[in-house]
Image (cartoon, rainbow, N blue to C red; front, side):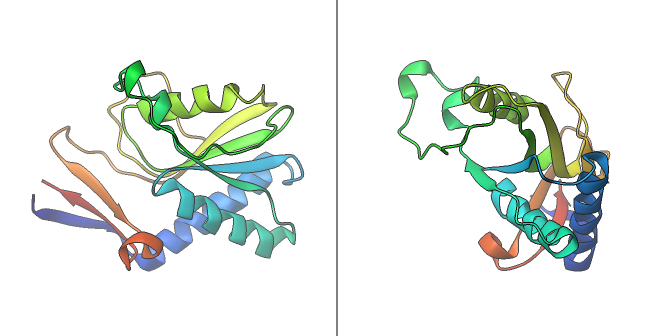
Length: 174
């Protein structure tokens, strides 16, 4: 696969996450009931970055958790379930914001919803993504989007984050 285009560089990612952080605060009229849940792998560092942005803006550190949705995926055989670290959180009456890097078919978000609802009934669930590339297979949409990037199904959106890849960049590959 060859790189077709750089969609977001380090500064653009920072600006997008700052904007998302402000939108979360505004939409929820503060963050007192908000918890962030980052989907493994790249949703986790994005959730922590949003947490830090909100702390700078509001002076409040909101709870942030990591979620491995492996056992909730619809393409995993029930017998193939693995032992994963589960987050301990009572989501009842909380505003849960799921954070992920790319929204594509919606299947990852569906799996995350199943995992969260297994832990209780949230007051509300919202979705924050760095990139929405379209091609949904399920009726799922993001509440907070860093960048909408129309793609073909043959293209691949790659998100690289400093915490995992030693650089911040979003590219489209053919």
